Image 1 (cartoon, rainbow, N blue to C red):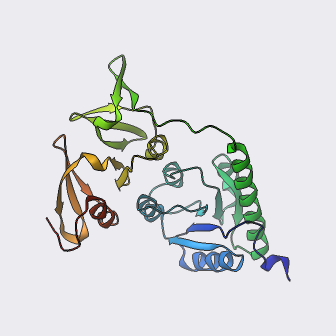
Image 2 (tube, rainbow, N blue to C red):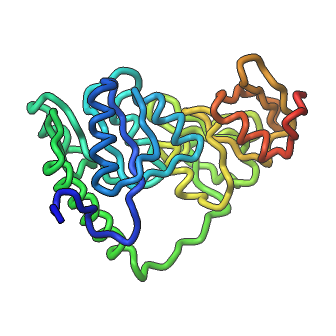
Amino acid sequence: MNPLNAAPNSSAPLNVALVDDEPLARSRVSRLLSALGCRVVGEFEDAEELLEALAAGLRPDALFLDIEMPGASRLEALAELPAPVPVVFITAYPEHAVRAFDTTAVDYILKPVYEDRLARALERVHQHRALRAAGQAGKPVAPTPARFPARAGGGHLFLEFRKVSHFELVDGAVFAWAGGQRFRSPWDSLAEVEGTFPDAGLLRIQRSLLVRPEAVIGHRSLPNGRARVRLADGKELEVSRSMTPRLRGILGLARGQQA
């Protein structure tokens, strides 16, 4: 068997997502990834589409990302990943190599992409995942905190998580809303919040909004498949079209119920 046609060693196929605004290039990489034994779980034209899919629950094992693309920046996309995910940058511009490795990239491929080069990148992805798994083995699981510090004036308040209605990302800072007021949290991305409260069922209703479902006291359908929710503190928030079906399911609303 030609080694280039064999999938890299792993216990299961990698679930990979691909972002490239050039359809032909995206199709080529997707075809090669499939030939190398990967399962392509998402193909996106820009970072905005990727972030919506992540908010809707997409959890890739690895991400192949064009370093130059329209919409939200690649760094913003990486910051919003729900957990550290191996990233392989793909681009036609070799001058971006240094910047690529300054981030979380495990490899960097120049276009046009060829199968042998992509196979080497996949080996690096597997090595990265194996090292990470080995490093986490045996570590105790930290308990989910019941409260957390938030900045207030010149000091801190300790907010009870169960009293927070939602978290909002604004200019690289995460604010926690409680009692109708917002407080600067210790986190810089919503992914960090999700990682701190993994069992809370927090719902990303927009790229910049993370809601605690128990705080939702009202729901109203909007045109174009969107919705608006009312929270216990009286604030109303709009839900993206991609997240509306999932929200309705969590709230126990039947398909035919539109109120």
